[in-house]
Length: 448
Length: 125
Image 1 (tube, rainbow over the protein chains, first blue to last red):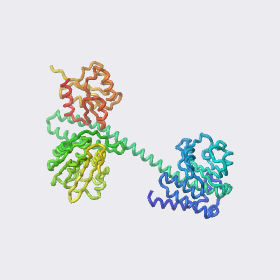
Image 2: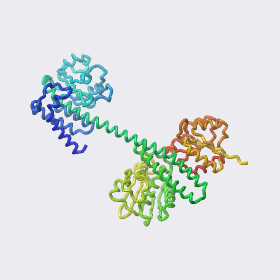
Image 3: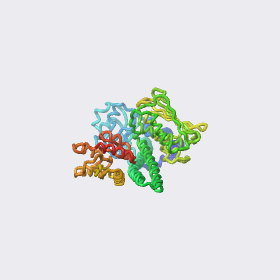
Image 4: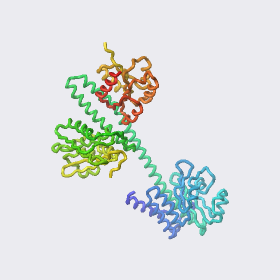
């Protein structure tokens, strides 16, 4: 959450304080029967405590922070010996200990999970009754819960408050505080303060639960969309394959150039569509966390890059493509995926660069543990695009001249190189652009 | 009179199946189509002359390519027929690895490659 958001929450907190009396009298579980003014309800010391509590809660953003504020900060502000929060697990009857402060580890472990259907306990009873439960002494505790006799330190002195945390819609948990015995539950002020605090904690927890539910819902929707995209991409391949196969067949059956040319266009456009579908499927795999699947084998990089360049050279007669290599260019890589990488990078240079300077690919196999391949051409990448060049759809918004793809090519290129444990460095200055791919020769090798 | 080599093409996509059949017919083969693995097994058991190659998709309803291959390998008479997998499934290579197939061709099909593989297998038959 940004600073502005926090400041707004602080302001709301102070408004809340001004409306404390009304809130208290209107709340469902409050036991203050008459409308009181803020001044009457809150002596200075209590007001200070509330300010401290509300500020801590207002500052909490993450789940752990909210729990810490609701338990630790509230407990400390109230002068509690111990404080603990149990949250109901979804729609079940199980309570999970969300946070505890001041308890011994053994005690925390014993009460980590409570069941509303299990033996009666003060926290579960408070939830079952949907009402606060006040216990003034160990004697009262053991009188009402005799089965706890073996679990308490005999003769210890404390008071216990078990307060159901009720949001606008339902009970979501229970806050339990223990105090020393210097006070009593006889004072309405004491109880009102605790009920007010628990109400405010409930609001913070409700907001947290809403935000978490929204986050889960958003993530599910996104995942569903991406799965649908993946399925659609896969299913589009079959009709596309039928189009290409049938067109190729028609091409073979005719020698009429007037028919042959449009058939060629159908094939080249279909092939382009096929590449887009491949990119979409790769993108979906990466987005769904499946990553790039590699089929590693012994690969000689020079013939692989040469073949890629030869294929592109035919379609770009105005360009001069040069391949330079030195050293050992072998490694254990996925040859098909690397062909995709260099095809993307060279095609990218041909699309966006200037033919005058040509395009040079240099394979440097001098190092023992890695091979570096640089694709260099004349042409400049805009400064503002450079830092995000490997982001999906990076160049899409400006529709760079000559761009005919989905805007996923460089993203996928980078993902393939990363899956190999390598990296790409892109530089563009003085009218020269270079993409330098570094690949560790072996699987599992780390680049330094 | 020259006897044409029979080729069994198993694909649930009618357009792809028929275009492959047309293509192979143009090149001197006698293609027979099947819509899924079960249909292919029934055709093989029903008196179809033994094909020199089975060209098969992986993902099909009723009986997929993997199950078909398992069934085929259980029948000594059928087990020797080589199978080429044609698939639009990107990770097909990993699947085909365990199927002991004669080859894998990705969709969209490279017809020249298909013809080369079929010629190689059928001339050896």
